[in-house]
Length: 299
Image (cartoon, rainbow, N blue to C red; front, side, top):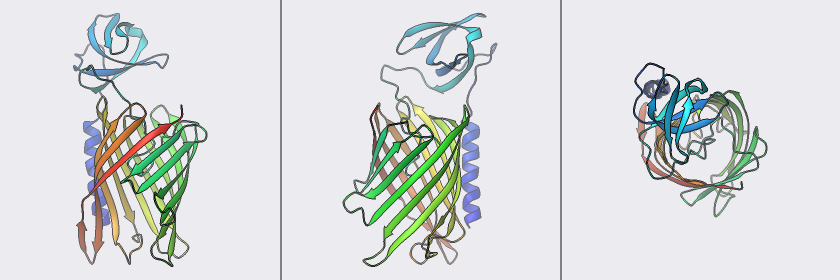
């Protein structure tokens, strides 16, 4: 059943990836109306729309600087990113290092502190120590002793469109007055794309001293910016092997999809969580809403 679940998720993402391929401008072809990211030879990124063109230059309309004339020889590529420009602001995905509550291979900005709160009950702090290293902690807001995590991530860029990272996390859960379950999670992560359109694949394992939480973990994430201030996110986790705390949950996977409402320094996430339980050959799920707020503190 877990293999079937993994196959379904991979199939959906492959189809989504095929439909979400970047549209590049090719000289001599008719461009698709919409907003483009123009990448220049010096690495400059300019967002705008085609106004007119000839064999030597392109006139594009930007939101901040008005009309600009670019030489054809300066443009490396033009990626279609959305519909027409509008009068409202265009906010990037300011938190590309996380899906909903699982990490991507992107790193938080150096010397920036990030705060996230989910359901009011859970809070998270994450700080970029260097451009390649970050640390974070999650805790139950009112009583951290009931649930808390400590994590660290080291990541680097392999190319302009590929990031890799190693993420290690300690998780402490108070199951009852006398039993504190301690779980470790280690995973390697690869993210392909840019901060606003990417696919993340992670693979790792959980472990605990008592052997209560031994399972392989596969993470598949999909991010695509839909409008200037709205990003679609899908996060999928699959447990391979023994389920975490099998005597309690029989949890075999978790799918989620929803939207991130971007602002200049903060964002709101809203999603639907679909935990998948399997016991004695029966598979069931109980949809749950997910809400969170996050903000960048610092520069």
